[in-house]
Image (cartoon, rainbow, N blue to C red; front, top):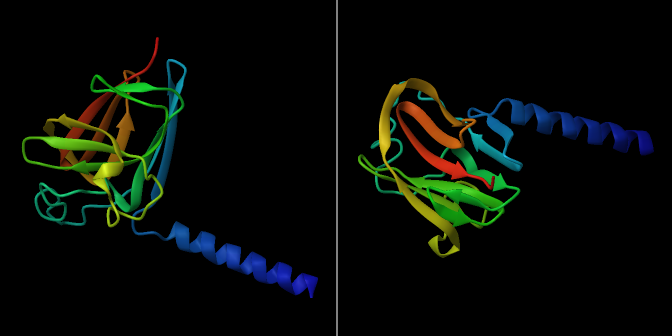
Length: 168
């Protein structure tokens, strides 16, 4: 009986891992350290697949999970400044509201949620506004962090960046 349970558990684990590997939008996890502050982020990476992205698939003026599937997540081991505004150390859902001329970047305290379906703006820890830029076309949505602390969200021909400052 013990061996049967062991085999069943192994099969279920294998199926679960196999299902995760076949996600249409893979879950990416990144981490780096800037001036002694560990910054980690994860997001579902959708592909363009010939679709019109901003203003169509991702509507202007509406909350976006900033990726695919579950809400994107970002965490900081120490307090940081985002675009000059203080954000306490912790783990946050990273949402955005894309616009043609301005994006709102949102750090929400309910980090473990699916998409933006249960998003509550009263749980926002911080909101900052940034200007989007025209960028080289990218088939896949990416989130990158430069050594200088600039987080860039890039998909299709659009990018939006925000500055993360850490303690010296």
